[in-house]
Length: 450
Image 1 (spheres, rainbow, N blue to C red):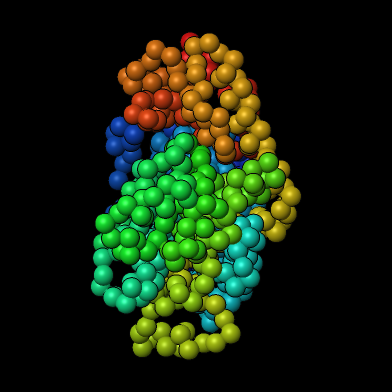
Image 2 (cartoon, one colour):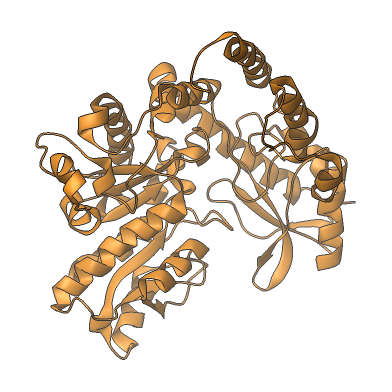
């Protein structure tokens, strides 16, 4: 299995041809031509004692398995938060896999870690974090939130002088679901802060702290910099002032919205993000990297190392290594692929200006979609978009009608659009991220609401 022989060459030829076909797709189709409930009937078991002809395995993948996947990098994928990796990043992702890079420590992968750290420094500079900031790439925002908030909890406990004290995080109803799951895993209780105009503000945070029964137990605040549902940015500057005054950890979840830091038209909304103690931005969202890439940054990385650094006899040589950077010390992980390299490669190839232009274009399309909705009498724009999420109401529809509309769009391969809840009402939601999404596509979707 590990030799490069004629059989391996044949596999390589077929796989490389498939790669060429996939990378040449432009625009990327939505896919999903085979429905989930059809897969079991169309697929056939392939794992057995003797193996299969590689061509037969690839044929099953291309004819049944791949068509049963909806591609998040299609310009018509407007549900949840899409993904739109550059061609360069996807190609280099294949290189990272073929190079078999273990991105755990400086000893074994200094070159890869150096490049990842350059990419992390780029993100830290975007956010205005200090020179000493640093961290690592993890697989997604959920893993990043868990890792960062474990540091926030332990730092808060040390401040209170009780390493077993049950502490609380200040959150809102709009805090990402992964943070709530993290709090459950960490045995942290919530302090729920009321929203003001659908966002967390410094004033509301101060009032909640003043009125809670045990303000000393609150050790961290979780702020949104681009909420997933509506794309809203919290009052980061006001929150930072309260965190400074009361010695609270400020964690900013910018997993989706952080890419807009590149856009001059949106940069002002993020004032205060530079004062965060921990920050999450996912390049696999609005920074056009392949899936499985989230950047986690700390203002003071030594605090994270004291929480996440692992100790064992076989790790002593890694832990004693000086002058390097061990990514395994900064998140709940040890084994990791160098998942930041495809982002680094694409950024190095295309340059920051190309990324800025792509993000600005998405913001322009978002504003154009909002304008289209305002111009249709049977639709109602629910609020002006701040980033790249548009919420609107189809007047007269109920939840069943929204669901039927969404299903029909997918059956027609027009677009993937999934309704959401806003102020206890089912509404329509368009999440823009792909620079290839056009206003013509928006017009096609809106035409189906008549």
